Image (cartoon, rainbow, N blue to C red; front, top):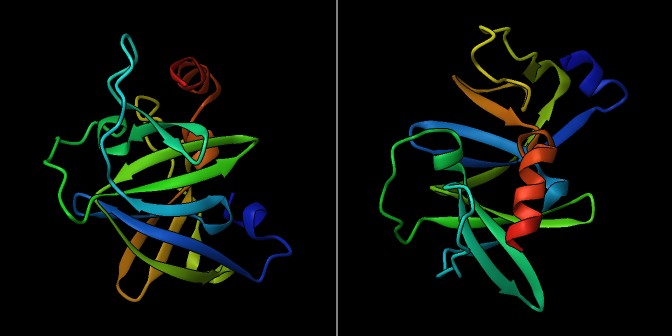
Amino acid sequence: MATEMNSGISNNEFLTFTLGKEEYGLDILKVQEIRGYDAVTHIANTPEFIKGVINLRGTIVPIVDLRIKFKLPNIEYDQFTVVIILNFGQRVVGIVVDSVSDVLTLNADQIRAAPELSAALDTRYIMGLGTVAEHMLILVDIEKLMSSSEMSLIDAAA
């Protein structure tokens, strides 16, 4: 899997962010902007991970809390909590994360295929694992994470 992802590409840039004690990375080309967390307009009858929507310069943007999506414990939002505005497939979606760390360039030999885990765990959204110095970075395929069934829920919210 990592070989396919990196074939013909010498370097990959990832925006890194934290959720709890783990560090994640997503393709920097999917990032439109990074904002502090602001109040959202809640939409009734949406899944718990959809916090609501914001109006971003005339575009209604659904906001997804990745802590809830990843079944992590809830925390109070603070001054480090950010919303990463993503743009992919003609969609604009915001994801709430604990903090944004850095932009890292990983070359092909720093990226390993995602491990095969039990069928009970959904790892389709994990592109691979990046190694930076002595720690691991979970590389997320954000489009797969926001699967088509969830995107229809998000579209309904917006």
